[in-house]
Length: 70
Image (cartoon, rainbow, N blue to C red; front, side, top):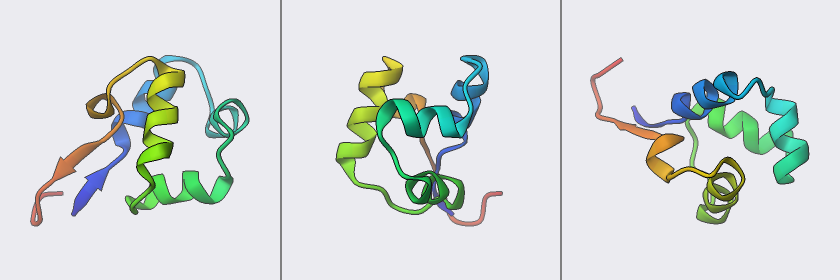
């Protein structure tokens, strides 16, 4: 499977934020958020901005899922 951003979405729920809130506050496009939903590659600078805004580490917003696992 590769990279999953489900931890990011769980973190947003815990903070009471919507994906659109994240776009506005971090300066992301809806296309970038769509990439998160699809598990597509995003630039490291975006990960850095997210971590700075959310005050977290990359492992708090993404996880590696080996092939063959759901």
